[in-house]
Length: 329
Figure 1 (cartoon, rainbow, N blue to C red):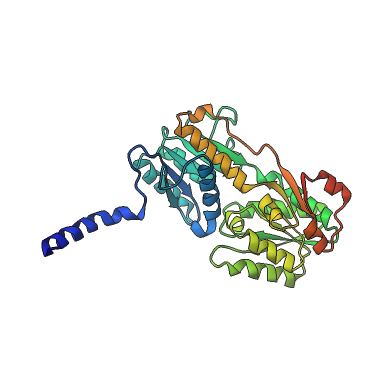
Figure 2: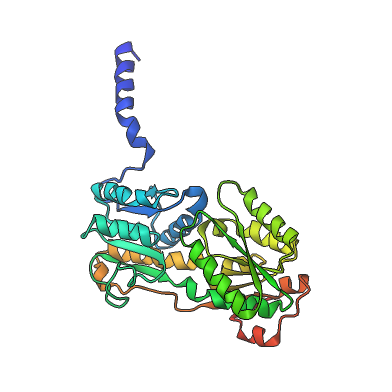
């Protein structure tokens, strides 16, 4: 290569370098935006589950679809700016992973389909007109985990009646956790037990270890683990710690019970994100969001891991086992 050719190649490289940080959609390849709080470390488990759902439908990121992910960190105020930036790239759809990110996407465009994946009531939040007829350009899925919180405490104290102090494992970086913590506190008070809060965030994986060690030091009797993306990424670690410290625990995602946790009451987050992927597939094939009713979990499942109960020295009441949708033995 001559000196002139080398300089020309370097010039081209400098021009193209800014484009390499983000995959660029090719002509005819669907381009979707993914707008989320947090980071790959804290919220990547849900993104991975969403990609798995897309793969089952024949979409592979970087091959026949491009997923443009924008993380807002712990700054919800950044979401409108990120949403506006996404809209400028004219994606085929935008994924909103919570109420604030969906609201930001809706505020940035009235024409690009917005597929939401939110925990909460999207009607009360003003995102859609109704579940059956969402109207506008927003549709997708929603959960109402807050309605399950009283059941989590009730089920845990039924399975482990000697529990007098329930620990709540929560992530201080999650916006809804203070609201959920208050709900757990009220539910604990109703069944006559105390509630203590323990924090673990994505800054260091060891934060989870420290939280469980602190629970043991404080003498708590059982644990409620919130339905949070970072915790979903730490299923194996959390279950192992709960069992090592002999702490009966209940979880909102069935993946925990499948991994050896005592019990779960809720949904599979992986199955949930398959539903989100189906909505994306529908809008990419031309279905209008206004014509797609919003989906909520059709079935809330109680899963009891009897092997773990035996290891913890618990005799699960027969009435509780009969209520279970699945008993792992």
